[in-house]
Image (cartoon, rainbow over all chains, first blue to last red):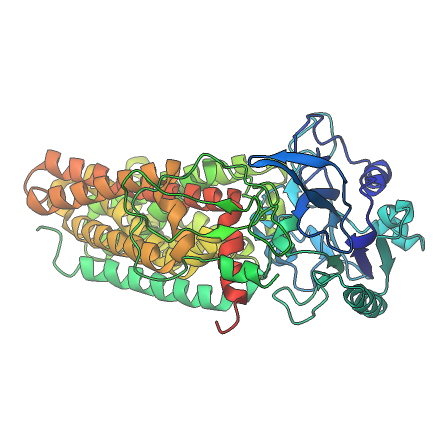
Length: 277
Length: 359
């Protein structure tokens, strides 16, 4: 099971962020104003499991999906018409088929559920933090505050509403989404729906429409949360070619073995000349 | 849209020097650019001040300059452990060699060092946990896909053996010379066992850092075990030069010097092979540690070669410098990785390069 997030119909209402926090008792993630458009939750993290990105993008000439303001903006060379478009995207844990966080977790706190989602067990995690740099999407974080929170010191991220799924309910964010930008369902079904939607958009002249995370042959074996984007992934803060670190592990261990052997040999050689120099 | 790929002129490749770069002040580059026109607010790095640019300017887009991957939540505990774990491993190797070649003074000193470093390193590891009281959860499962799990089990095997070897040194004082022989034989067995695990203890940490999405660690990954065992040899040799009796310290000096050379070479290889992701190692905090590491290691090796064999004080100074170089090098690698994760450039540009048609 997983998500298909169609950003072309996202209206940036943040109902998903709120519903996620409400259902999962995720504490507040900072109450400061960033100046980054309407985005004050900044990015996914230990206390932000859904995050709505806002990109105000100049477009010339106006694209089919652009929202012309009609307002003339004075430019440096005098008054010139400027139009821009909004890109909004509700980001979430990708629940990778090959999940870096899950692979490197030394305690077994992270596990794969019967819904193929990746979930942290709060009573097992000891807060080693290894999953944090192992995630190629920068999703999982270690919760550092507020002090009274029961999960401080533990790795935290989207659970795909594991508790709701077990009761045959869809995740809170998908439930709350008023435009069906966030769709929940079987991955195969979502993939075909996503492909249809991209084809429709491209036919309508939206050349930038593309799928992200829908390819089972990508660097993480496909994700359980795919996206329809209208621009390059990095514009939304997504990695253009994510790769699970674990795929390099065999090569790394071989080098470590060779290095260890060399060190032992060097130590042996150091004693050949005796104790006095 | 394809224009973006062309606009990403990146710097992944070999043979670039680090140097220092001057980065522009517009660190909050927005991820905005026009659909197909000129890059509107695409972040462009300028380098100036007459310094040699190490890599060509790379243009890339990001979401308000926010990181794509997340830096580890680790504190100075972790680079400190990288150093102490290596110091312990190297010292156990020296202790085993000293035991087998009858250098009792060197053996006592290095066994004590190994135990102290192991204790300090274990403290650092536990202290860095979000929930230190759950440290034993590390031994809840054995997971080959997790280098930290492998490392935990390695330490669980190595630690008691290194501890027993060090403890056996107390036997002559406690039991008297006569009855201590049996204990010392057990100490030898424990010490040889510890030495068996020691090289793995010194090298697995390179795999641990390499197995992440942190750009610098990931790119330097295959070379990190070499850098870390070299640093371990330099630190252990250096520490033994400080603590061991002068007449027995020659093996420590040799191992320390070999480690110093290895460390300098491995650092150079990382610089050359990590491409763009090697850049953060020369910048900011990481750069200061890297320069400190180089200075200490070169000075320690030079001093060790010139006067180390003759003067007790010279040997101790050389040893301290070698250990300090290893310490600084671990911190340089740590902060280099943290800095590379904090800047989306090091994640986005190499990935774009990978996706470019024909590569």
